[in-house]
Image (cartoon, rainbow, N blue to C red; front, top):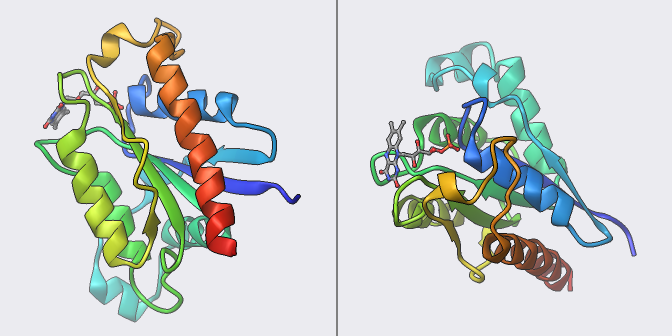
Length: 186
Ligand SMILES: Cc1cc2nc3c(=O)[nH]c(=O)nc-3n(C[C@H](O)[C@H](O)[C@H](O)COP(=O)(O)O)c2cc1C
């Protein structure tokens, strides 16, 4: 069986981001046959400008993001919730990637998880992300839903996900994303 390539996309630029740390945990917990690469170019993506897109085309960091999404077999988002919604840097990158030609989310399996310092673990923001990418004809993995609440208690100082229940959920998410990707291939 060929390897399933998953692109991990964190919605946080923060050095000690719990969400980027959750992606590292997902990478470590991935079952055999699943390879998770974490995209690290979100910071370079400029604010969306349709004049620039139509004038000089996609800026190189945007082209790199579009290519990475396109090349992946599946996507795994880990996002904070900012003001009950999707962080602007992530929404901005999705806006750039959503334009023609060959909009790369079309037909792409994807899963979402999130970590927040509060009690709701990004539940509100995650559902907005699901709606946005589903609108681009991405195929969302419905379950499990992974909401890592009170994140400061679930990671250690080195950014390792230490909470066993969260580790089990992340592991289940990656395995389910693999199964979902294979199922969609038919
Ligand atoms: C601008 C901003 C808005 C935030 N809004 C929310 C929110 O709506 N809900 C929530 O649970 N946490 C909110 N937080 C707190 C985040 O959960 C917390 O900063 C978290 O650590 C961000 O994820 P990260 O560690 O991956 O950067 C907000 C933080 C920032 C900076």
